[in-house]
Image (cartoon, rainbow, N blue to C red; front, side, top):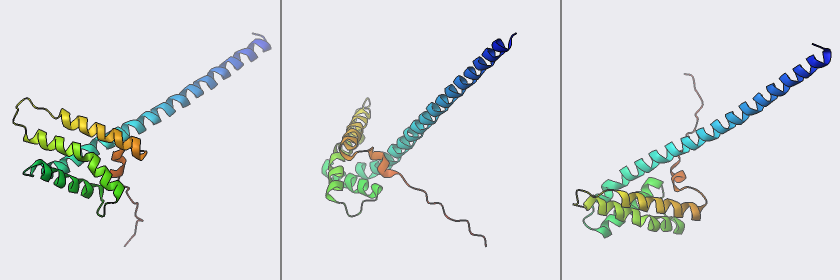
Length: 154
């Protein structure tokens, strides 16, 4: 092998090493992005679950649809931590009313074959409206920021 052939071979190895490095970095970036997506999907799924678990008893305890909507709206505002609801918060509660109605109607149904598709559809429509009109996902409102406290030795 001549010196030129050896130099060419080493340059080839260097190019292969750089290409492998670039591929690895791209893969790691894709994995990190996908992990963030999955984390958000998981968080939103649990927030959705916890919200409907919290609202359903208040809604289903109502004697009629009007009372269900009032109890559901109050429970929604409470779950979001909105005690003195502003005009925009009232709008959110009003837009959430079809979800409350769907929960009440589904919970009151005597049809054995009834499913919760109307609840899922109403919730999806509400979340779509919220995202389009509030510049972000509805479920991000339920994000709880955990404050780190300093460690104090006694």
